[in-house]
Image (tube, rainbow, N blue to C red; front, side):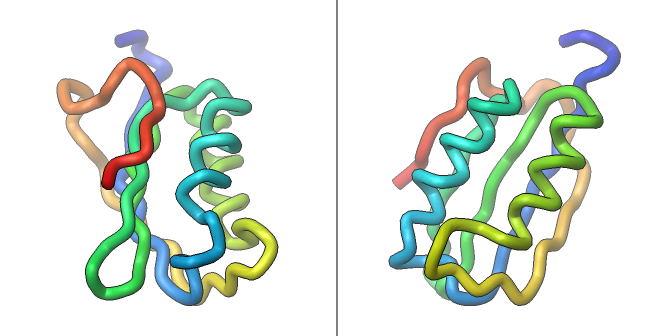
Length: 94
């Protein structure tokens, strides 16, 4: 992994399930050149692992606050992730 690549685990809460949030996240992440994954959680939230250049991660974190049409995001919390855990593409986990 290049030195300019970082990773973050992101927990998004609010009305984020049933509004195509995972598909929207994958599309936005791929557009920004990010890798990682996204999944729904049992509590109604969404978790995503995003990895890439700092600028692309910052942009994605801002975009999470808007989400797709129909979403209503109440919180976006992040934590760093060790580089060894980052996939080479962006996938939706079920």
